[in-house]
Length: 317
Image (cartoon, rainbow, N blue to C red):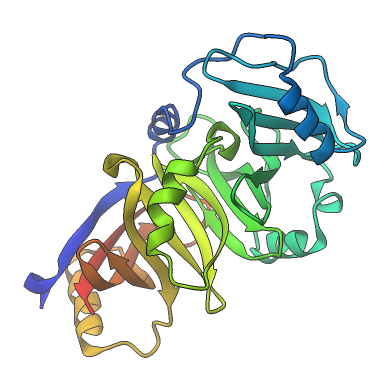
């Protein structure tokens, strides 16, 4: 049975903060290559759209009218008192990110979102880092807002000099409270990925009829588009190496009643890889066909915030 397995995703480690940082420095589609130079005045078409979109907002002085690549960046304080930045490309609004207080954001964000955040069970969050944030993301072409959280969680590590190491965690939740992403790893900040047009154009044709796009993140250089179909949150991957083309769609499924082929694949992997656990079964469709994806993880099971490695094997459905 082991010979029939398709090893589609190799083992990847999230133990290295350096690796996460290096990947985060990739130039993403739609990102500026350099910081824009201040330029005034703000184009009239941009200012008119901004005023209609955010009535009662106070425009701040540290804004950019439009740079040589056509991007305009307007920083403001919204009527609800939350600071935000609206991004325009060639006169068209592309996205807005609003940043909440890292101390009392649970009182500021929508109740449905707050309930889902608390329901993840996360605790001991550390938002003191400059790289941590709580953001509301609105995008062109997407009807729903996304709430994105990045923070650190301390855990003990005997190899560290001071015995304390921090793991990066990222959570994404849509405005209706659907949990989109919850991972001990690294995603690029959504506000650095301002234009998702290429990914949406490539992925939308592969989504089932009746799907609703909920949000998106960039993970290790690839764009994950979250959508809901038949009441299930699913993930479509737009791959950077394919010019942002569709690579696969997957979602977790019940692993209690598995087929013999899946059980054999699971048992074979565990017998050959000491220390791993079978954690998730996925329904997967990629460019080559339909598969079951079996995810295995290894780490300190007594400390879920510790460093982990994971691998996924694929077998035909």
